[in-house]
Length: 554
Image (cartoon, rainbow, N blue to C red; front, side, top):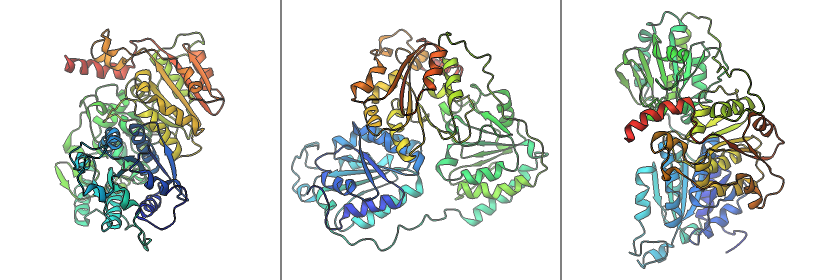
């Protein structure tokens, strides 16, 4: 079958359910086991197929899409396709990103013959690759005609509710099996909070908050899980009372960084300003909201948090001092705390701290890491989606305040270099009309650079800033600054749009502050900037981290 699809099938049910959850685009690469399934995606009235240059990039794109849209999806073929994407799925699992991985597999009629089909290990077994996904998905299903509708609904609901990836193995013949249209929507999310556990939080919390004489003595440190588990509104209610607050680097852009009381980005002993440190470490009572301390998110575990004065709210559990209460959803716990915080005496809050950029760099001044990120920060505007690659880009931008309405995306836990370029594709298609700003090093961009061709093909409004520092600078800072394994081939990045067949792209190779300013202020559309900086220059925050990491490496 090619073109229009006639009867209603398992594949139609799957795509309809994805659309019901808000997915309007599926990423992937076609393969012979998935082609029939792809007809149902390509001809769906509200879902668009977006082919990528490889399956890994499809996984990264689906992840970027899900971070903006709430859920994402990709479709690959059996074996070779799904295993190319498995790194991206593992990253989505680590960073709590709900992505549905749909895999087209050989027809069940062929599987029952146990013959050595292509894209298999040649042993006649077809469950190896699904088993490889067991530890990096919250739900999995191998579909049959008998279980397809129930299992599709079960897996999708788990992905939605647990904010983790799921896996659906769809044999080619099962995808085309006729079924009845669903007469009811997916079941709504269940309330995971135990009322008694929530009451348990509300009992000791006032006594802990009483350690603060007023709202100025209460600190809030917010983390990524607030965003992932839909608790941003509840956090805003707590902050509306007027309390000092900060975010971890992983949660940058979660709150308005220009608001009174915002104290900055907290990175433990690595790069936290004095005002930030005081707001967190010296608070008489501290609320941790959705914070997960990881090595690269905490200044290598240099945070100083005292449990006896801390209320620690996780995704589904809350701790007041040493006492733990579960299950309690993060949003419910924050909602319970909001009136308790507001009942304390109010105080005037200090203005949000600003990074002192010093005098503007002269137009002819050579670019440095410090100057580069200051210019980028100054160029951002409300509505931008900023994707900062792990390394000099992420840690160069983390300390800089960004305007309200900017979304900041990084991957500091999984930290798979090359992630942000395909994630740009996903994020910008998830939020049409918003400008994407990609900040990526030359080594990372070489990993996934072919996906620029898809960004160009779709005509997305983006600025792609490639930091040309001649190799893996973050690795040089950790170990082996002059070793050949940290070298890469030099690319002429400004030539890529033409090589990909694009016309009308704006390109610039810049090495001075004035050239960068002019390029950042260029016309709308697609802009690629190759920003040349010294090979061994690193941002201050990254320099602090790599000094410790270098000791570990040695």
